Length: 397
Image 1 (cartoon, rainbow, N blue to C red):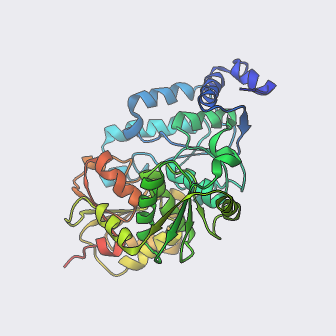
Image 2: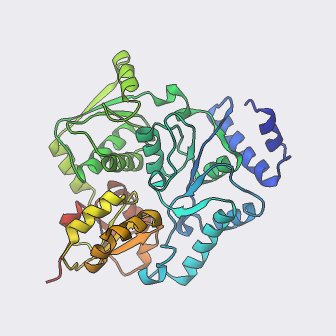
Image 3: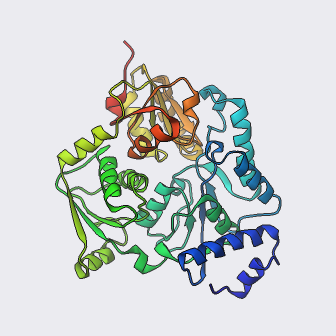
């Protein structure tokens, strides 16, 4: 791999031990994937935040690195394992939270924003079209590549952190034009809405694996619907980029590729979607906890939740997972008060996937996210019901 003079200095330890370690990681990754050089990045999004997923070994690594490491580009964190403010109210243990807060503090010392969210593009980390970035959370990677037209591979947590500290990442895969070609044409035979998008993403992710699908929808998806689609694609497969006809920024270029190359086609009808939605549920029992906001809810999604629960009293607990920044806007708009009056809670910094909800007194989790439905049974050991929010709610009699 070719390194510039500045990169050679970093690799040789002239800018400190932490930078040297991170450059070694980046070069090793580049060698593995055949990168010819590194490329400067404009931002990073770093996973490996929840104590549930990284444990004591991860905490020790981060605390050691934070002694003399500092990020060179704007960097944000993935969700943590608890709401950093109301963790006690939600029932999380002090022992777990103490370790979690130490992890977040180590990142803070390195200059990483402690707004813990899987939707960094909703809190100011918004890369421009064609810019090179180093993001790691699967749905955020999918959104950045597809909807924003930025360029990133699915970085692991250490790789994204190393890129943030060095301001560079290995140039291969989705950073190159050839890595962004579509290889599956998906035609929808029916209009889709709500949880349909998650089901479609789940079907296609299972079909294409790590490929790049090109979608032809009958109706134009909103940005929130594109978020749901990408999250499902990334969790059921390893999709990091998709194109939507006349919607995503590289769709016209991708269409030319389709016209020049013979690629496989997949048709999806209403029966396929409905069968998949049933398949994503592991039980017919009513959920005692409903979690929405996977990926973290936008202000528009929170508004819709407020409209659904307004004037009602919920029998089952409702968590609306979002970032602290979006919650602040929800507070001002009055949505938070409506949701809390109905018996729900606005939960920040975390989500049902990376939080230890299995340690709380819940048995069945209701979700409107195909990603959550895919992960909760394995990561939390709980039953899951997949449906739209209005079908998951149980009102008090």
